[in-house]
Image 1 (cartoon, rainbow, N blue to C red):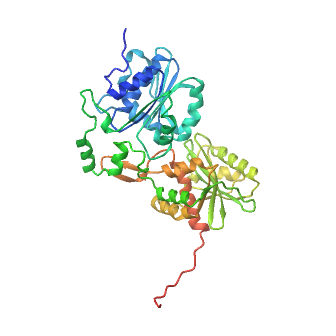
Image 2 (cartoon, one colour):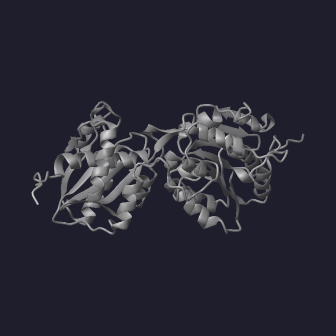
Image 3 (spheres, rainbow, N blue to C red):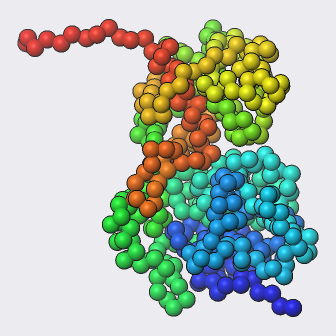
Length: 435
């Protein structure tokens, strides 16, 4: 029996990538939206599963996106994405786990890099990152050593999101002979008949629906130089760099260490260790992980405190810390769990989201961040952005659900508390019109 993969007739740029995939090359594809990136990736997943027995991962920024976009989703022709995987090679499917076992023993797994620790034991020989520029950059750093040891390969496809980790990896591997690179705007991708996939008329239609010139440059012309559109703190982060407030910082042993947390349960959790040094807030350490209980993070913080020989100050957590949650005692809230183990947690008052964002902007001029221990925090503050409503051509009030959310929320809680507790009001200034 002869089985053809890919089953569909690929566009020219997809065919080039398949040719390199057959030569066991890694793929980095920075291509505009609607060019069939995920169609190629599903076909590539099936091809790799047949060619090499092993575990093959297809990852989205969030686990739920893997289900909605590919596992249950359809392409622009109305065909299920998974229909690209021939039935003849499928042994069985696990709907709950989004896994497909192939006839030869290979396993195809869809998931999210937001829980990359849970993927470490899968021992993959292929990893496909859909919209890599929106992934947690730590995921690839943790998974790549496994891929290298297994002599596997990776596929990274995305449209730009400013000069973030997607831009960095593009510049790192673009001249690497082990990678096939495609950096294609709408002017460089064509259908089988030679016409463009996205025409000038399509772009004009998008503009008439409210899409800005910057968004068009980013999404259709794959321009890295467009800033991270919709980012909350672009100007504030630029000011920090210009003013030299991202620097190596050492804890002051004469001052207490404080902590502030955003708790995600089995999802990502973020904690900041900081000191109030005169008018400045020094953020010294970020703790961030997924799938771990509260005690794990508190133990990490205590080991850090002992290493720098400071005393503890105050510990703050969001209002939902009072909710019952599984932990040391299943029937107690996390605040009671922590207090029993010597952590006198206090609760931050609930503040609406917009006021919290303004509190962060108010705090930024007083913020200094350690450049050694807080690289992931700096990335998160740059990549924390609004959700774009494509149909309306506007940004939502709500943030994009990506890896940066929990870290940015911890900063928001810090800002709310700083303005409430540490910011000493200045005497009112009188102005005179008498010259």
